[in-house]
Amino acid sequence: MSGQASNIVILTGAGISAESGLGTFRDAGGIWSKFDPMKLATPEGYAADPDTVLDFYSARRANLLEARPNGAHLALAQLEQAWMQAARGQFLLVTQNIDDLHEQAGSASLLHMHGELLKTRCTACGHLFTDREPLAVPRVCPSCGQAGTLRPHVVWFGEMPLGMDQIYAALEQADLFVAVGTSGTVWPAAGFVQEARAAGAWTVELTLEPGEVSALFDERHYGPATEVLPDWVQRLTGAGPAHA
Ligand code: BJW
Image: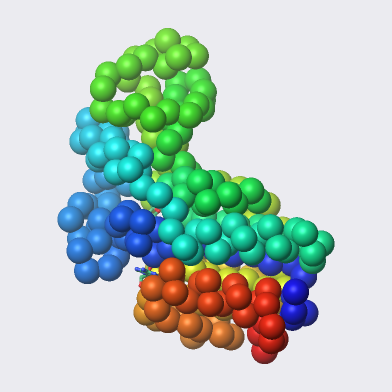
């Protein structure tokens, strides 16, 4: 494996799953152009109208159960495998996505900072469980037995993203930071590039078109993730310098 980098942190967003048929949020025709995020992705929206929020996430769960990983997810799983086999250093894949396509592709060192759609959480007792059933159907918590307390295990606006201590610790040690398919609109993920730069990491953006924080990246490649990501992984792990 070429290049100098040893510790790598990769951040993915909705763009990496777009070619698997899952919608992005802020592109033309994206999820937030059809649905109001303040009503569907906030604790206040859930408190005001839980049935509508549960319907929304039930429909997205059904879509996800049909989805399969694409070449970009597979390229990241292969990169992780190569990185670990070569004992290069630490590898952490942080995804903002709530889908399970990285897992399906074989990624292992993976952190879902905005939660997981195929998990359900009880707001009364905190019980967390894998769940492929529709959320909209009235059910009781399998642990405490209360009714009306189950919500999707996702991070809504105003809620604390998951695993932040582990993410910031990895960013502090990063030699290479790569953002894939994210618009850089949502914080704190949008600030990771600055954290990585402060640690001295080389920063790479791979997405369809420039976003909010693109100017902060050392290296930028624009195009569909299934094209730009496998090419970039090939350059990093194959012949020629990985970066700089
Ligand atoms: C392709 C492609 C192809 C398309 N190939 N690419 C300033 C500082 C800190 C916080 C804030 C702040 N200002 C405001 C806040 C609060 C808020 C926030 O960021 N609001 C902004 C809208 C301004 N943030 C929060 O509330 C977060 N919590 C928080 O901040 O807690 C306090 C805290 C602070 C500091 C440290 C620690 C804690 C929580 C955010 C929760 C986000 N939740 C959602 C919904 C999750 C559940 C669900 O899926 O329904 O997460 S919103 C939605 O946006 C989802 C995504 O994960 C997230 C990011 O979207 P993403 O992935 O970037 O998608 P898009 O659509 O925006 O972009 C897609 C990209 O792909 C585009 O660039 C395309 O070009 C590209 N693309 N096709 C390659 N084929």
